[in-house]
Length: 180
Image 1: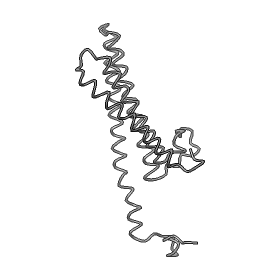
Image 2: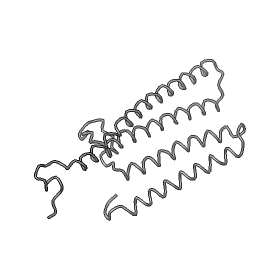
Image 3: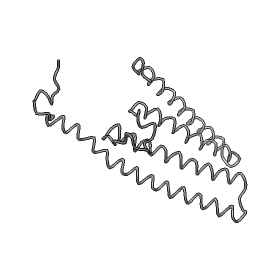
């Protein structure tokens, strides 16, 4: 039976280089904290857009199309905030340290089986959702946009779709038999 570097030393401690490499994961902590700040910015943005919608509605100076576009912007902000949560919580749990949320009533269902592969697929599908909202807003505003702009947004969206399918297919091919 092969022994690990820690047990080989008999001390239960890693040697200096493995310790440094393993500890380097904590360099990601400021990145996750920065994403939490970015999430706060999105909360403020959501409320600004909601207040703007309510002001337009109260004044009676808003068309159905404008309401739809503002609501789509609100949905977009929420979807980006959901993406941030997946990256912050899932990324921290996967790459930095355990959160120890087992049994907590607010633990997200997806967190119990998150790993780098699952996180990658979830992020890809979230990006497709966000791209779909942007594309829908583009088509609603089609008369005000150039055909070239709409074409490129559609091509980018299709690229996201193909990429997500490729990621999911690769994940499925590399998954151990009896997995997923």
